[in-house]
Length: 356
Image (cartoon, rainbow, N blue to C red; front, side, top):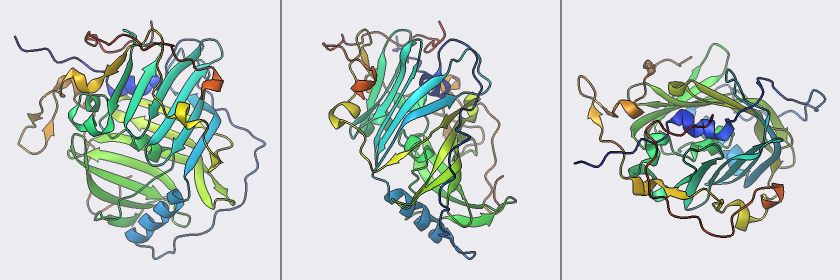
């Protein structure tokens, strides 16, 4: 009998791990009404800017950031009930290091998502069965991890506003949209095949206000929106203080509100911050050992490959136009003294439950 392919958490479960738990409803935006606006950002694009000018300006802004940290982020998941206020810490060191930890005042740590130079991991207190999932970056494309997340984990760093655009790609645009912003697009290759990446920027300051990733069928895989940009005159960099990430196929939307972003100020003890945690009672599950993703099947009429229903994107296709624009330890996190036992079972058929 053929070995049954384990059913992995969908993209909605992956991102829900970041912010899902039980408690009182929370749909509020927590911002500081007395925060000063700060100095204006300089103009870095001219009215005649080309796609190459936009790529250069966006990359120049990101290249000024070596490290990035926020110790007082608040998280909102619009439309999802039973969510208490979640506070979070975010730390980034380009190009691959990321740590996002979320907790509540009542329950303590709820989520730990991270990436170092070798691997990335995802942990939620509500996992059933209890587990910490991880995979090596160099095994991601051939492992079951990509059925959880159809875009590279490093995209989360881009979504926070540290956008790096491919200088060797062939770009379409810029197209001026109705709101005056400029849109450029380029082809690329994602873990599941060809993708198209669309970037929308402020026409003068090159702030990346929108990012969209489409698959080869025109279905949107992920989007990120940046708002409330603040210019740091010391580091000469602009970053968004509010970031919204969306995966339309899962109807998931989450917003991070961040105050006092520390740029190039260090991110804490690297031996702890960028190390995958060992958590008592949560065995570590290497997604690469669960076998390859389900075999792709041909779409009607030929063309690109898609995946079977358990991981198939079911939203209506969003057509891609080629000529016009589209609309740390000190914080209460504890590691076990001993390595947990190896995970020997399979994931439950109904995925991971976060609302027991």
